[in-house]
Length: 361
Image (cartoon, rainbow, N blue to C red; front, side, top):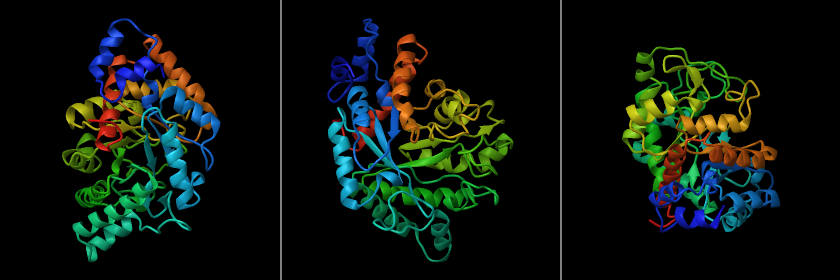
């Protein structure tokens, strides 16, 4: 990133300064690195990743199982990543519990699924106990250097044949699902880790896996309000700091676009109607639900940002990352990326980093 950009974008400076810098006519400045969170291969920081972090000042990184071996190794890996970063990064994991946990056996904890926690709550758990569990798990992550957990699942478990949600949901009742998820998330955040509710506006009523194909939730708006949207509405009221989109089509909301690239869903519904002010991540852009027709990664990314997403999650297509960042820079310079939209996203990224103490207030 241009050092002049860094001087106006990062600690001690404001988005207003940056906006004025652009209005002065310097279109060579690009903040697109702050729109991207990357996955990467290996147990150490490879040169190719280090170059992208240093050159583009990327917003953050995502750790998968193949990045994880031992407690000491993960701590060292994250410390090395942060040392490379011109601006401290968001470091994320999928740590829900059950079948979705990156930090687990043999070196990490065995965690119950959300469904298990929900069923235990019906028998003998209290909301305080759920919050304590979330705080304990957040402490485990914070000790590694992870500051964002892509959890909880706010999807409602309404489809028995759902191949991707199921026991990742707290309940088939939207009110209970929200109550339990938010108690758990409060604990996570007590430990200094940001929770991320997913998958907006609801992935529970699908019989298809969005990793493999594009699902459709073809129900009316009244049903969406009563079931799918209810936990997200509660989470927004509780000021959840981040959400993640679903690569799913909702004809009642937008028949032409999956949620991730839908302005109607990401901006009109989420921001204007529901009042969400936090950071919006895409789900992984390598998933076939968003690129089922072999759509170009850069084109999909530009559409997602212009629709209202803030951070693009690209976890697995490691060889495509240089082209993605270069393509986003071209889109910035050409005006294909809406500049006001980009500045809103950068501002939200910085707000999340300030909340975590990564950059100065």
